[in-house]
Image (cartoon, rainbow, N blue to C red; front, top):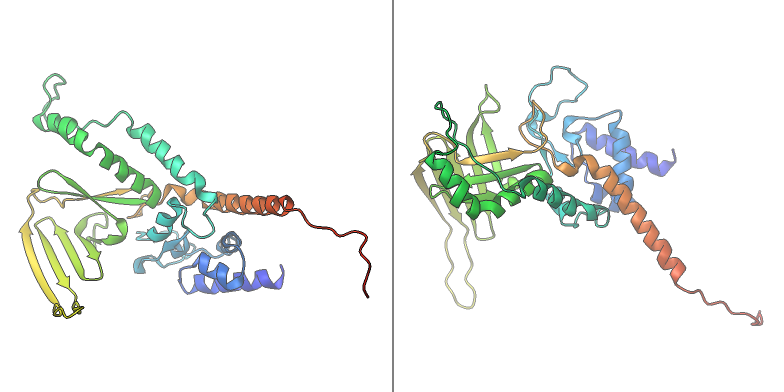
Length: 313
């Protein structure tokens, strides 16, 4: 192992030991190497030292920073993936994977189309035997108007679940559905039953305001905080303000936020992106394609050669 490799891996080992997130693009820029090189160094470090918080591009929840090897009876894993990274990966914007991830979106689109291509059917859980010729009224509405209205939205939610690991949908009182980015959602779990959700907090932030939606089984609380806006061109300033609105929950004690998690294990609260298992392959694809293109460009440019010239010296 040369000194450059040793220095990179020593830096990664220190970050892992301190529970810090290993930012592959940033380290690649710092050491002047391709991101795939940093990724391979990280994999080598993880082979002997792999805390929960250092799963591939996963940020650590405070309750999930114990080493995997410290105890066999590890309980709940609250680790969340880096949604920003995986969102960029599927849009070919993640540094070091712009070419290697070309297969990412078509792969998931094919899975979504295959699974949901013929549509879905809803059934109502009931103690009475189900009569196919006389469906429950809710089933008739769900499989008719609801499916025709929300078919594309259901596909988009499934796409988010596969590509980001988690997807969330708010069921509104008028039966409409509002998708929510997982990076906006915070789950407040029961301390004794960790899979039981007590509250769901959804934060929407912009330059001018912060809106916080808190959903529980009893009510919905909306807090709207408007930042101070400085007037321009002689317009008066808008002072900062904060308002709170409370509404009853109309879904009979059920929190109207549905969480879809892909590939989570029995002790995990959040899911994993479908690509997580393919990230090494994407890095290799990107490295190979870039080097191949560089070689083609170098060989494709003629090099001028001067013959018969006298040496002036």
